[in-house]
Every structure is written in C-alpha cells, then in structure tokens.
Figure: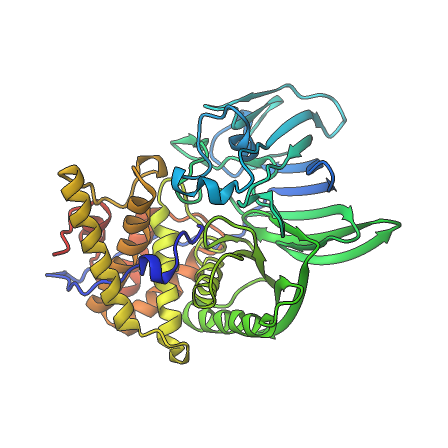
Length: 499
C-alpha cells in the first residue's frame, strides 16, 4: 500500500513485548504448489496528451479457478471514484490541497462496449455502490476450470491530481486505470468494495499481461512488466510490455524522466529521476541494495525488472508490480526510506498478496517491518533498529493515549476493512505501527532463526497467491513449531494492551 508518512513523521513499528506462555504443537497447513491456469489481459492503449485521456481496448481471457459456476463476471472501475459526484473520497480532507493543487479536477472511465471473441455484443451494466463495478452478463454459464475471452473498449479521463491516478506538473500516473477482475472467494462471492482514501483499496489475483501504449515522442514510459519493444512512427512512439504472474499493471509517463540503470542478482533496476537531478546514481544504487537485502532475507525477486519512479504523488510512495512510485515532494532521508518500504512491497503484496481492503495489516505490517530489517542489515545508512523500534512503541502509545483522551475509548483492532478506520492516522498507527510491533514481538518470542525461516517459508509457500489471516497464522505456527495462534489473534483483534 502507499507509504503515507515518512519515518520522521510516524516512525512506525516494533514491539518490546514478550510473549507470555506458548505451547509447542505441530500445525499443518495446506501449501498450494500445483500450477493453475491464469487469466490474462491484453491492453492496447493510446494516450492523448492534450486531452489527458486514454483510449483502450482490453482483451481478457478469464479463467474460472473457483468451485462455482458464473453467469456474470465483475470488474472494478477504479477511475470512477474520481468522477464528479462520486460518493467516496479519493484522498482525506487533510491532503486534498496537496492532491489537487490547482483545485478540483475529475476523472472517470467510460465502458464503450463489451464483445465476445466472435465480435458479438455482450450485455453489461455499470453498478456497484457507486458506479464502481462493471457487470458483464455471459451468454453461457462459465463452469469451474473453463475460460472465456472477450474485449472491453473503454475511455479513461485523467484528473489533474498528484495521485496514483492523475496527471501533475512532472508525471502522468496511470495506476488502477483499466477494468480489472474482482477476486472471487469461495463462500463469499466477488469482492466489490468501494475505493477509499485510507490505504490501498485494491484486491486482485495474479494474471499475465501484454500491454502496449502509444503516446507522443517526448514522453518516456516507466511500467510494470518488462519492455519488449519500442517503435517510433512520426511524432508518436509505441511501447510494448510483457508481465507474467503479476497482480496489476501500472504506467508512469513523463517528459522529464532521466534514467539510471543497475543490475543486481540478474534483476535490471531502473531509477527514473528527473532531468537535472544529480542523485540518479545514488538512488539506483540504494534500490539495488534493497533488492539484494530482501533477496537474502525472504527469497529471490522473481521478475526481470524493477522500476523505481520519482513522481507527483500526494503520499510518500505507492507500490505496483515491478514499479514503485516515490513522491518528488520528499527530502533525501525520507526519499530513501520510502524506496526501501515500497520495494519491500514487491515481496509482500506483489508476490504474496492479500486483500488489502479487508486485511491491510498483512502487507503493510510485513512491509514496514521489512523496512526496519533493511536498515538493521545495512547499518551504514545510519538508522538504528532498536531506536526505530523504541520510537515506534512510543509513537503508538502516544497515539492511543491522545485518542482515548479525545474519544473516551479506542478500538485497537487491526483486522478490519479500510472503511472501518475513522481517520488516516488511526489507519496508519494500527496497520503500520502495530503491525511491526506484532512481527517484532513474534521475533523476540521464537528467536531469529525460526523467525526468518518463517518469513522465507511464507514467501515460498504462498507465492502468487492471496493469503488470509488464518493462513498467515498457520504458516508462522508451522514454520516456528510454536502455537502462535492466540497470540497473533490477540494483537489483530485488539485484545493485547501495550502499556
């Protein structure tokens, strides 16, 4: 999820708490090793720099990997959260002026047609709670293990916004810009939650992507996946990209990009800064160190490319597969910290996914704690792990004290949907800060050897899947040989009191 606040502002996470009495029992969980067929997206895009619009044709191969049969399929239409009159807020009131420095601006996505592979129209509806869902009515029932192909033609309008979706003075950010399939959970149905200003209101399965975008020659493109070709035709250029087993696809365009490239562990790392920047080499080298460290701690980064992209962004940073946005509004120390955080998301969210709307503490807690681990393993950057943990504990207790003084009581549960956090600070403290305190507490209880084995096992066993809280708990119990279930549940349910 986005990195809301820098280390200096919220200094999140770490726990000096010791687990009371834990019984060692064997715990068995299911590990999914069998390869399954993946859905795929083929996107052909044309960006109009004058109108700030994106025309797209999206060819989808949808594979029904559930145990149920479908008569309809559902897709998120995230850009409609930015439209005029939307019922949801895309940014908190405290950050509105920073996100919209030139005043209110609106964006949207218009689905023009949906056709089957024979070019016959499929009926569809724009619905959900706030025009946020595309419902496609299928001609025939789609049974388990079957697949269907169809084409969606759409027009996306970008707002003038320093957000993951929008254009600013320096970059054009195309995050969550196209219709993407809602995750189906057996027993629960399709996940169709609204966009929310708290956190990253996204949840998706991995898929295979083939994407091309045509834009003016003066625009340089950073993307998810790996670039496969670049063709110039008069005043326009078409970039093509491929991305396999990735959870989403993002592009960032700019007339100001300058690129520095490094290679570490067979991964090409591109740092996209701005022309005239004198720190391209520094940040490219830092990003390489992050990948190298996380490879050692958790397991190898499985993709060929990672793009670290300086961009207009209201918050500190934002993660996408193979691409992270880093706000151009940060100072040097915060800039590096956010790079470390967002790159860690490639492991926790990118490869091991989760429902970021319903269980944000999983990827954010793991990612923020991983950031602490990076600086613990790389002491030359001047951040002391024990001091960071102490600061996080102090911050969290101060937050709880002030919140209780103002409201009389506080809900300290972590495992709740984004719309159940009343404020952005509440979300940050209970997701990032308390999340790291949780994982630091587990580490203190089981010891380094078992703890780091548990992280590696989690990464290996749940690669390219979406992990639930129950599966995460089971994984830690199995890897450490300790019954951590009640302890972890006590933290995430708000029963643990940090005094």
